[in-house]
Amino acid sequence: MSDSVAVALRVRPLVKSEVERGCRIAVQRPVDGIPQVTVNCSDSFTYNYVFDSSDSQQHVYEACVRSKLKKLLHGYNVTILAYGQTGSGKTYTMGTAFDGVMDDNVGVIPRAVHEIFEETAAMEEEFHFKITCSFVELYQEQFYDLFSPNKREDSTVDIREDKNRIVLPGLTEVEVKHAKHVTDQLMRGSSGRAVAATAMNETSSRSHAIFTLTVVTTRKTGQKTVTTSKFSLVDLAGSERCSKTLACGDRFKEGVNINKGLLALGNVINVLGSGQTAGYVPYRQSKLTRLLQDSLGGNSITLMIACVSPADYNVAETLSTLRYADRALQIKNKPVVNMDAHAAEVMMLKDIIQNLRVKLLAC
Ligand code: ADP
Ligand code: MG
Figure 1: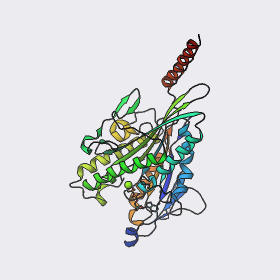
Figure 2: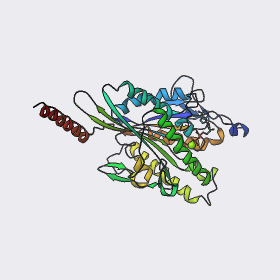
Figure 3: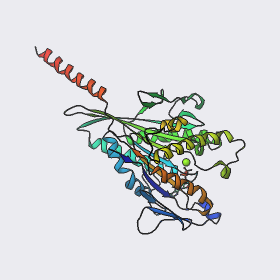
Figure 4: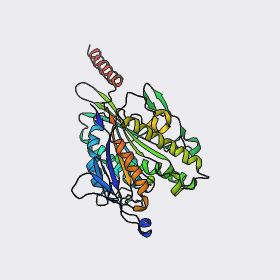
């Protein structure tokens, strides 16, 4: 099965600073329901989904995320990537903050987590689920474990390839039993990120944050099967060039590193989108692309949510995001069910041993 990367475009409302600046709306969605946007009444782009200021968080979630969860619980890896310039709505859309009240500010992650636990509870008779989560930040080509109990400088982790799988050895995996447990963890990890951000000049808009839920599903009845699937939620760094919002001087290094990840991501998307996948795909150009290897051109079911401002002031960045997202539309993945044959065999052998024990005791 080959499955294209799905792309959703989300145009946020004008924010206060744009209104105060006297900005006008330059990004329009036609009213006839086609998932298309037009910029300055000239350039048009079509995606799988287009959302604008009239679309609620719940609508975004139900339209393009919900159906992917079913796949996750059947053993497929699922990735959601939020891309766009700083302030375009990536974090709002992904929604790491959740205080327990499901109002319309709640984004994709808490909604998905709630539904995953509801679904797994409903499937409990037939399946056993073990769910763990991890949270990493990639800043200046260095991964930081956001769940680590250590100080930030002691919380770095490496990336390696192990039997064709990308792993971050030593990364904290927290087992989670219910939705609130996950959202509490997420808030804790995000606040670690935010504290670091204040100390390091808004690191958060310059770093990538990757939250992963790993679901190990064991079929309890009939033939025992075990699948391990990953739900990766990626809030990418701001895609703007450093000239507009940032003084390049002091932050040159940061700029280079941010660009390194996003630039490499762009290169990977270009190669994969060109359809010439027999050739070399430059995943190894950055840690970001190494980490996302499965999500782009690999075995994952992937959704990119491209976020843009509607303001004329941001048209250059908006057009750059729209083009990037347009290229991502061309990428084909090959989703597969991630069967863990070894774990299934161990389960089967345990069953055999148990049966033999019973027979021995009966003798
Ligand atoms: P980013 O993570 O891309 O830097 P944020 O998610 O922090 O951007 O959004 C910037 C601001 O815009 C925040 O104040 C956020 O609440 C607001 N915002 C973003 N998207 C929306 C939306 N769809 N509806 C209402 N407000 C939004
Ligand atoms: Mg953000």
